[in-house]
View 1 (cartoon, rainbow, N blue to C red):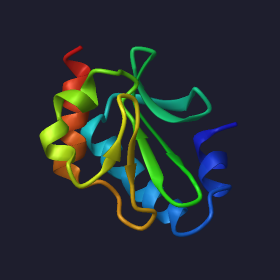
View 2: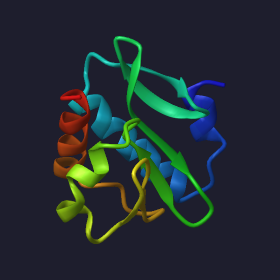
View 3: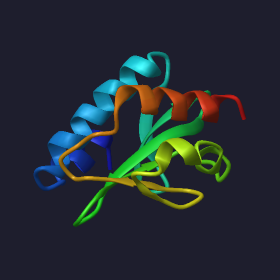
View 4: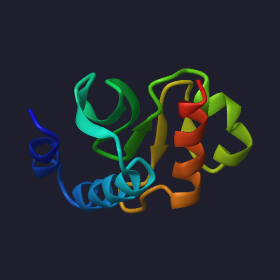
Length: 110
């Protein structure tokens, strides 16, 4: 499966939300490659997944592909549901660019 096939299979409004998220991640990680990692679309830097995303029935999810990124930004994530490895956000509201940039930056520092 390709990233485009994954997104083509997503229902609306999740598809539009994830397409916008993907565009923002492309801006933040212009040299990254895209692929499927652990069954979901991801941006990879030198083959390592850095930022993944997926849709669920009632939410969308961001995956930092590290259990230490989200706990390190806990104060900024108070309005979201999250665990060590996943950040849920509304199906019709992509994560803000500034937050995505901080998430990616934190992941790249590891």
